[in-house]
Structures are given as structure tokens and as C-alpha cells.
Length: 246
Image (cartoon, rainbow, N blue to C red; front, side, top):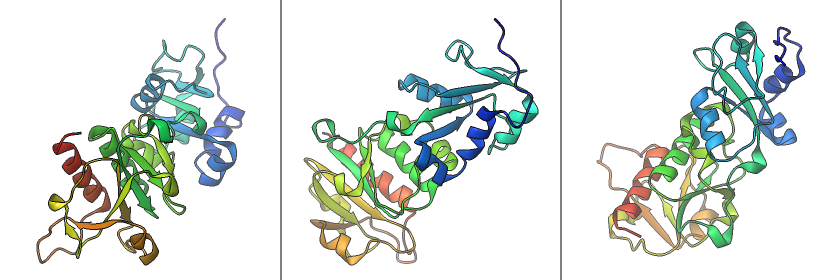
């Protein structure tokens, strides 16, 4: 039987996707929305089950994978989108199905982010943890939401593969990355279970967080440079660990 075309902006499924643009609603409902076939397919490949799936009635995507998807009038689907071009598919997933940082299976290396509030930086760090890991990402209160639209796009699907946890859950030896004054990263022992700790670009890491870290490390910079972007610093640290082998 053919699925009825959604033509009303008041349809409850469209209302749900609009709600999920808000972090408060994502927190309350435990859901998030993904736009575009690449992100949705990455979620499906990671084993997430869609709560809702909507496709462009004129340009449907992932028809095999989303056999129960509901067609939507293109103009209505476009109105839901935060992208610069209309998506062909939007799907809603449960946050609880994202990979979690758990002690028995935790990767040996990861990033702990202290109040890193920019979702683009967070998404990029997730992508680096995926590419240069396996690695985890642990987040403090006040950090960006990894299921926000911008973080999801910047992660390029890595959010569905990288274990996430709280800042306190990050295991192993803690090495704080600071712009200056730490030992050069290349000189540190990076063997065993460890966590690189990074702060926001404006505020950095507070004294109490630095005190809880066993070592301070810096990436050598030119004299004229103030600091590196936090996403770049995290990627360099993960690369240095990966370069040396397991």
C-alpha cells in the first residue's frame, strides 16, 4: 500500500524535527535529527534504528534502507533543513544508541574536552578521534552538543563510531594541552592508557583541571602565534600518539 504524501506543515513528524533544532528539546526527548543521505546512511551502518524517516517525494534517498520512510512535499522538507541546499532525507534517532565510553572496552587514548562550546570544533574533534584512533571523546558540562546539526555535519558520521562519555569518565593518565609552558609534546611518554585534556580557545583550562592532570604538554609554535585552534591541537596530539604505534 502506498504511503500517503505529507503535505501539511502541521504534520506531527515535521513538528518533531522542528523541535529537535533546540538543544533543550533534544535533552528532554533523547532524540536528534540527521539531514542528508551521507549522515543518515552512516547512522544506519552503525546500527542505529530510525524513530522517524522522511524523504523528498520527488528525490527519495536510501529507499532500500528506509523502506518505511514517509514522502514529504519537497518545499516542506526544505523548510526543515539547516543546510544550504534541500536534503533528500531526514531521519530521527535516539541518543541512547550512540556509542558510549565504558571502562571494559574503552580505547587506550582519547580526548577530554573542558567547556569546548563550538559545535564545529567538537564535530571536527570527533572526526579526528575516528580517523586517528580508535579514540574516545569525553565532554564536560558546558560543552557543545555532539548531536547538534553543526556538530553532526562537522563529524561527517564519526559521531556514530566514536565512544562518548563525561569528562570525569575519561580513563588513564591525563595530559593537559596548553598553548605554552608545557613540555614539548614530542618529548612525552605517550604509551599506555591516556587522555589528552583540552579547553576552550578563549578560557583554556582552569587551575583545578590543570592540577588534576599528571603532565602539561605544549605543541611548539612560532613566536608570533598565540595558540592553535582546539580542533587542530587535538588532532596533532592524536596523530603523535598514533605515529608512535600502539
